[in-house]
Each structure stands twice: as C-alpha cells, then as structure tokens.
Image 1: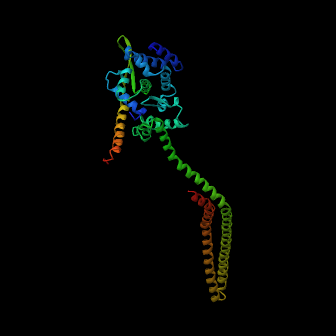
Image 2 (image 1 turned 30 degrees about the vertical axis):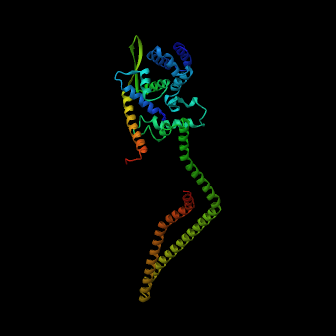
Image 3 (image 1 turned 90 degrees about the vertical axis):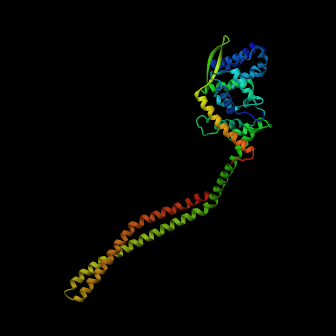
Length: 107
Length: 279
C-alpha cells in the first residue's frame, strides 16, 4: 500500500479486529487478521497490544488451550468507546478525501 | 537459529526493562510461536527480524511512556519504523514536531471527542505516497514553519520601528512635552492669581458696599437724597461683591480639580500618543 498507517489508524484496526471476537482473541490471530488488510510486520503488534492494554482499551486473560496457557485479548468498554470514536472520525476523514478526489461534487 | 535460541537471546536482550514487562513480552512471543505452529517457526523468526531489533521494538514500547514510542514510530510497508533508531535522513528537531503532532492529533482524542484524530497534520504524514516516509515528515515540519515565520518577522519589524520612533522622536518629544508642561503650569498659576485678585476685589467691593450702605443710612437723616443714593449704590456693590465672591469660590472648587486633571492628561498625552503609533 502506498499510504502509510498512522498510529491512531493502527489502534483502530486492532480494536476492530479484537472486537469482532466475542470471547476474545489471541496475539497470533490478531496479527494474521490485521495483516490481511494491512501490510505490517509481525513485530508491530506486540507494542500496540501492550499499549492498548495499558490504556485500558484491551483486557487480557489466560485460558487453557492445547495443554498450555494462551493469552487472550478482549476489548473493554473504554476500548469500544474509543473504537466508535475512531469509526466516526474515519468516516468523516474518508468522506472528505473522497469528495476531494472526485471533484467535490457534493457541497 | 531455532525458536529456543531466538527466545533465549530475546530474553537476554530484554534485561534492561522491568521484570513484569519482560515476562509479558516473553509470554506473548512464546504464545506467538506456539500458535504459529512449529512448521512456521522459521518463517516467524524471519518475519520478526533479529532478536536485537525485536527487543528494540519492545523496549521502545515500554520505555518512558508508550505514547512517546508511538509518536516516533510509524507502521508502513517496511514495517515498524522508529525514527529514533533511524537517524540518517532526519534533520534535528524533527522528533519534537512529531511528538507535537501526535499529541494534538491522537493523544487528546480520548478526552476530546471533537478533536479529529485524523486531522490535517496527521494527514501530512500518513498520506505520503511513493516518495517515502521521510519526505512527508519534512513536509509537515516545513508547513509548520512557514506559518510561523511571517509572524516572527512582523514582530521583529515592529520592534525595529519602535526603536526608530524612540530614537528619532525622543529629542523632539521630550522638549516639546517639557515646554507644554511649563506653559500649562504658567497658565494655571496665572489663572489662580487672577482668581485670587478677582476674589479680593469682589470681597473689597462687598465691604465697600456694606460701608457705603452704613454711611448712606447715617446720611439719610441729614441729606435724604444723598443718603438714599449711597444706600442704593452700597446695596448694589454688596450684591455684586457677594455674587463675585461666591462665583469665584465656586469656580475655584470646580475649576482647580478640573485643571489638575487636564494637566495630568497633558502629561500623559505624549506617552499615549507614542503607544498609539506602535500599534
């Protein structure tokens, strides 16, 4: 992709990906899901997840899986609020850009 | 390099950070390898990069506050880019700008819903195209500068103008002000003396009027016509004297404060005028 992804957008994508799983999801899966839309390196996800966790947008819990503990991530209420804010902002942003690209037919 | 070696090296490289953060990161990447499956082990190691690079990324997220790490970092085609580890193309002071832009565009968005996390400045560094990352940042920085420059220039010009006015104006303004001040003082003194003179004259007139009246009353019995005339003139003089005495007294009470105010205003005038010119 020619456009780079800012930190806020990456946060929004991660929150969106995690919020799709009711029961929470885990690091590897989050990385794979994000990588389906965004070409980010695998080492990118951890600092983002860790920060979102510290910001209380994500909560973690450990669950037995395959005879080992797996760490799961779940979106908190605060995280949902943040995600909704991002969604609105994204809508406004893309609408403006689209209008600009398409010759400002509207308004 | 096997997974075990990779993780051991990573653990060693993460000694600098707190135990909690280290364990957290180690658990995450252990999970990651587990979930990727042993068949993907090599691929994951290749993707994650060297343990040193990964440790740098983790440490950047942990050290200080995480916001800061975020503001330096950027995610793009080449993966996570951290400007602090990429010193080649960036002019000094740029990081500061990024930090600002971050806190403005994203940092406060949680508390201020009306703030747009994807504001124009954010745009300047997310929407750079083929030219690469480095350019967009500089562009943003440059834009910030150009808006700053004219303001600085005009304020400098103002200061020079003020100095010029002071240097040229001082030899003219000071003697003029002094002259005006002395003139005003002279007028004031003259007015005061005149007022006192008129007041004395008025009092004297009244006194003469009273005396004339008394004399005229005495004369009434000897020469009624002269007596009545003197009495009348005396009454007239008394009335005039009293009138002027009262008028002067009232005038002084009202006029003197007014004059003082006028004088003070006159003194203030040159300074106000100068200030007005600066604006």
